[in-house]
Length: 192
View (cartoon, rainbow, N blue to C red):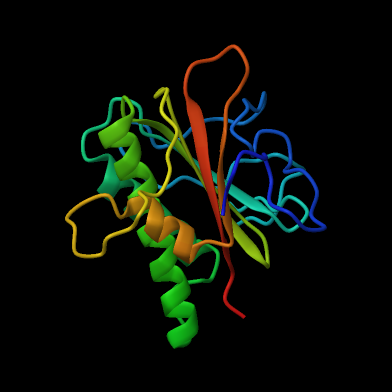
């Protein structure tokens, strides 16, 4: 379901400050030129000594992609490292492995769309709690992503947002007033 609301329906309420793509004052941006995974972005009191920062059960990681070549593999590697840090990988079973593969596929599709249809991705933001992982890709493009209709499986190309729509609990677009571009977000359920 495509929507423009800044958060998915349910009892979770709005995302913490900055999770919808707005700037977080104290949050640093990591991984720019190296594409290296960085510890979770602190947005609450310091957490355990392992570098993760829980925020009411939510962990957040950011990767700057602006001007990077090879943005899609960088984003996938960064996401894979986050999934390892958050315990989704190595997968304990087929359901958990499929959920992790879905996350990696959706990241690839969102970043690819920013590369093909916008001016390239600016940032990837991942946030995870016990129930949902949220993926956000920010870019400066004016377009509005939408699945091609009618969807024709045999036709080359144009399947990205259809895949996102099929795999995700929800997805949408957020635009910050007075700034160019958008943030495309998608949420997937955590494995049981």
